[in-house]
Amino acid sequence: MSESTFPPDPEAPRPSTPPAGGMDPEPPRPPAYTPGSAQPRLNRPVHERYPQIRPTSGYGDPRIRHTGPGPGAGTEQEPERSSKLSARLALALTVVIGQLWGLTIVVDEWMAGDTGTAWWGTGFLVLSFLVVLGLWAIDPKDR
Amino acid sequence: MSVTDPQPPAPDAPGDAAQEALRDRIAADSLTTRRDYLRIVATVSGGLAVGGVAVASGILHRHGDSEGAPEVKKIADRIERGESLAFRYPGEEDRAIAVRMEDGTLAGYSAVCTHLACAVLWRNDRGSEGELYCPCHEGIFDARTGEVTAGPPPRGLPKVILVEQVDGSVWAIGTARSGESALEGFCRQNGDDRPGCPGFGAGGPGLKATERSERT
Image (tube, rainbow over all chains, first blue to last red; front, side):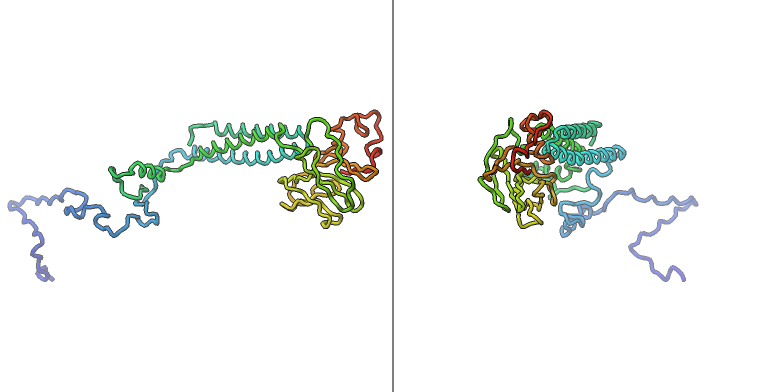
């Protein structure tokens, strides 16, 4: 098998002949990389080249035109602070549920004529509110 | 990065500001942050505390609450066995019901359910000897004591103290709160120096000695 079996492509670039003189041939440098195509029409945006493709990137919501994480993704830099805020919120919600229960007791006792117990229950409600206020005031600038 | 924009931004197009506002609104990370939720929860908590103070201060109306002792009021010339009578005592806003059971027991109660303030009805056909029935949420009160026997009411009915004279006429002479006996309610409203009350000398003959019948 020899190379003569395959005739050379007449349009293929021919290898440069080494210069005479016995020096090592300098390898040809590749052209500088430039993104895109040499043909400007191929560098147009996708929606210009393929107007039939709806700009939804596959999402059902036509407002979403690009894939990837949404705005704000990757901005969480203090997960401990975030979890503490969640814990504060959970504690406050628990206290408020206890307040709802306490208010039913206050109403029940007052309607039954036990005003003293009703005032004790009111104290419980106020103290619970102070607890929630403290949870809120730990870091008012938190988010 | 996700951009939520219904159309490509056109800087000179009319309504650009509105579009930009919509884009900002949709692209916002979260419209209500946990911080906002915490503030809302704190506000609700404060509201509950204020509500407790208001309740303990007496913002709610209790049956029979009035300045001084309630007046004695004749409510009927006669109440037959198994019948009931709706009346208002001591105030015009205090709805009450008087019941004569089959065995002759006379009882008077507030007609306002302690659950959600629906009207309480006398149902002679229910139970072994009739019962006070709230049709709103199936609350049932014992006709002899006013205590809750079934349903969601949190406490028994306030009582109206009834007395029956020899001629059969029925009079209301006072009220008692839920869980309070008729005597306690009577002494609370009329002072402890009345017969039967703790402060009456060495102990008087009691209400029942001067009245033919009294049931709460």
